[in-house]
Image 1 (spheres, rainbow, N blue to C red):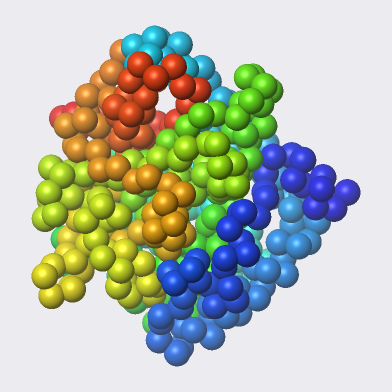
Image 2 (image 1 turned 180 degrees about the vertical axis):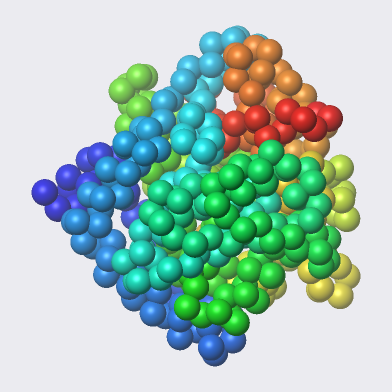
Length: 401
């Protein structure tokens, strides 16, 4: 059956920008591997193993089977008729919120944990902000019988208490990170520190960030989103969309949707960043307000102070509350293939409430940023649009949004 059978399932297709990714993990000038020597050899081993195992038909078929039977893929492409009428555009929602565990994070968790299992790893460690990656990781570890440690900022533990309980119920150890701003950046720092000190563990990075090969792996496993969406829109409408939109913190759900459409120049692509109050010192809109530096193992845009030192991001959405960004998104910004807009907390809250009341769908506050951007940019355009609904909003119901 081979790769053609695998790709025909709509699961995996190498990003159209793969030719821009050299062996050291760069998208143009962005990316790379900036880590201690002790970690560099581990990441080289991981990169080589990933390249080899993903060419295996057995691995591909196992991944596809789990996505179908355990996750419930393909996720639907849903015509949001009431939202479309309200906005004045034909808007489809890619329903990643319908996945098992409630978000896109499960796609990458399954893929990376399968890789780790094939490498003989017994313990998985991960970071999480909104908790969705932590829940997905804990779920797959329970499914495959692996130990699990989840690092989470103390602030995020309070604002995402439901997901913390879910992780613990699944058997994961949730470790509170009390340094810095006590959010996602600090969870990544602590997870990386533990990984360096415990190299026999496997660090399952949840977003499209960090040193090579993590952006490559995450983009590979999340490309299921865009591949499905492209097939589905062609079946439903007989043509490609005019525009596609996704939210991004680190950038995994966005690159998952975008990757299938990057070579289709007639399709406009938009990313919605967490704008906070939309000022340089009260935002998580890294591509709008940041500068390129080396941060957490990779060269990309980051929110910094006047001296070039990383600063804390600020967003109502824990999953977007991160000062760094994917190196591929940095490249897409500079080449102007994708437009990245800042969406304020207020705009996201309005979209959260609106979608709930118009469609009976409660989105994650992260995904609400993409809905808000669609409402703003697509007003009375009559465009055909796909918005990635990256997660469901159960976790946000207890908050004052």
